[in-house]
Amino acid sequence: MKFWNALLESLHSAAIDELTEKFPEPKPELGLPKRASGFDAPLGCTSNLIVRTSGVEAGHALSGWVMLACDADFARAITLESLWGELQNRAQREFLRRGIVPKFSGPSVAPVRIADTNGLALPSRVIWMPFRLAPGQLQLGVGV
Image (cartoon, rainbow, N blue to C red):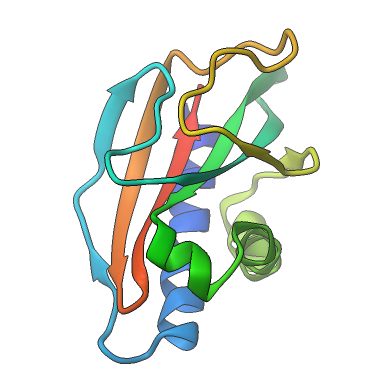
């Protein structure tokens, strides 16, 4: 789990910096992590972006997901696709510092309730990190 923890911490740190820069006032409110079994977008979220993610830990290949979910108000302020690109760029220093090399597939916009991902395994558990901002709600999730 070291890889997944480092990935979540790196992306969370990047998200705080990116969101604070984009929406400085009022400062983003950070919520407590929420654990979920299976994948369903958090309550109130109407847009999702999912990214197939892989890495290596102790010589073993790992596979999972990174997800962004937001409400309609946030989606009007910024697209999840552009935010994802900015988070990846900003997180690179954190990835290096933590000694991880994640690989990301191209992002896919997904329905709020995912029933099929073309044969790819859905996460059995997800940790969501909530943000409340001036334009609305955003959730960052990592699922394995």
